[in-house]
Image (cartoon, rainbow, N blue to C red; front, side, top):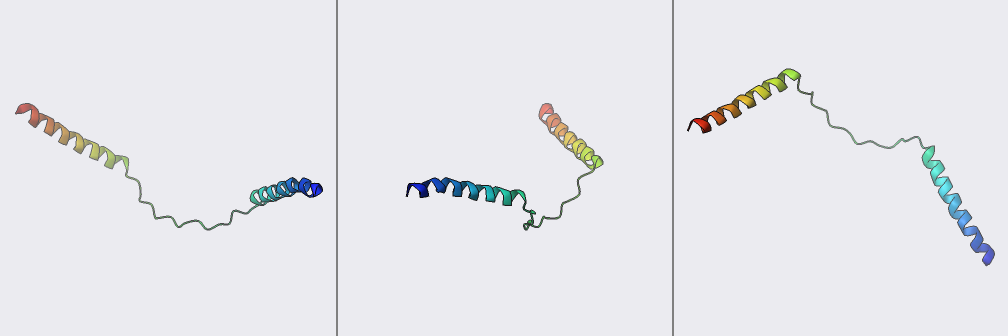
Length: 68
């Protein structure tokens, strides 16, 4: 019975080694989730226009508050 207990760690080591080898040599062929179509990024012109409009709106609000 003592002989049987000495082989148990070898079996575990072999199991772990086989699992690691299988993982290392796998082709990675698993199903990937379908990705949503991406929106095109805003151009620099649109970002600049948005910044100017928001800045002028904030300036208008600040002017109205100041002049009251």
